[in-house]
Amino acid sequence: MSHTVFIQRVVLRNYKSIGHCDVRLQPLTYLVGQNGAGKSNFLDALHFVRDALAGSLDNAINERGGLNEVRRRSSRHPTHFGIRIEFRLKDGRYGWYAFDIGAMASGGYEVQHEKCVIDGIGKGPFFRIEKGRLLDSSETAFPAITADRLALVAASGFTAFRPVFDALTAMGFYNLNPKLMRELQKPQDGRLLKPVGENIASVIGHLERVAPDRVGAIKEYLQSVVPMVHGVERKAIGPMETLEFRQDMAGAKYPWKFLAQNMSDGTLRALGVLTALLQTNVDYAPTLIGIEEPETALHPAASAALREVLVQSAKHTQVLVTSHSPDLLDDRGIDVDAILAVVSEGGETQIAPLDQASRQMLRDHLFSAGELLRMNQLAPDRQIIKQQSEVQFDLFSEVRS
Image 1 (tube, helix red, strand yellow):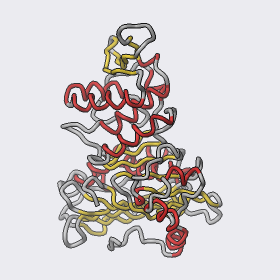
Image 2 (cartoon, one colour; image 1 turned 180 degrees about the horizontal axis):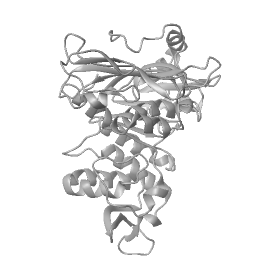
Image 3 (cartoon, one colour; image 1 turned 60 degrees about the vertical axis):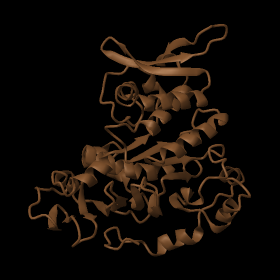
Image 4 (cartoon, one colour; image 1 turned 180 degrees about the vertical axis):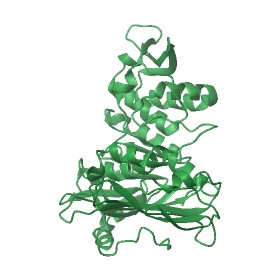
């Protein structure tokens, strides 16, 4: 796999609409399916890991409506949900991190099991936790832990586990909100764009200072997507800040200047998507960028330019996008393995690589993925879905298969 692939594999159990899922990710992965299929829930599972580590487990659960909204609802009433992430660190070491969270009879929840392994037990750092109790670890000392928090947060104080914590908390996830991007913003940390774009002025300002070439690339691609816009920059207004755009106006010799509050939703979303994808700079780089439907509010003609940015960005940072847009997928050069098909059956989300018929048509360049999607022929591999259901991989297995 490419060196840009941080997350190699994701295994989920009972997360929202996903009963079971076991998939591998590429440098650029498209999660493709109809509205309501559960694409966002897969992305949110990774976002949940980031939120639980960067903030707190309690906040991550409560922001999603509580434990009953996070774990999958079904006739079997599962009492727990679990996540396993297999990764490759920047130094080339492989490892995995997994946990499951269950409801308690008295109410509330607890981390039932948690495990982190780098290079394999006996070869590199590891720890195993059960209900707030340390079972064993590669470290002679271990910080105090409790069952209502993820132990990796406390373990990040050790040099051995810090790279895993830093990599997982450096993931960025985006479902951009033009309304918030349009408002005046308080100056904030601009190293990483926040999920709905609420600090985009600070991010542009930060890049202007430390990585002007990144700002130049953002402006260039923005003009490709929105031809009337000729530039954008951070602008201070008293103690607040916003963005100022230069845009062509009929009859004017030079572009006029407009603040963000006067720009369209499509222009602001396009800028947000481009900033999310190109925000890598000399002092900070996301390990993974996940974007919800980047094509939303864009003219179909802009799809080729957007796809080019996704491809270019994936050469430096792993990218994961959800989409149901045939226009975005209208490229016969898209790697067959870069597409995961998402369907909902009986209220349960199924995620798998494309079936053999779809793969063959794409490999033979008979159709693009977008053309197959228009014909409703972009289907998941049923055999893989059946195998996932019948032989569910143990979240805490030592074997990387």
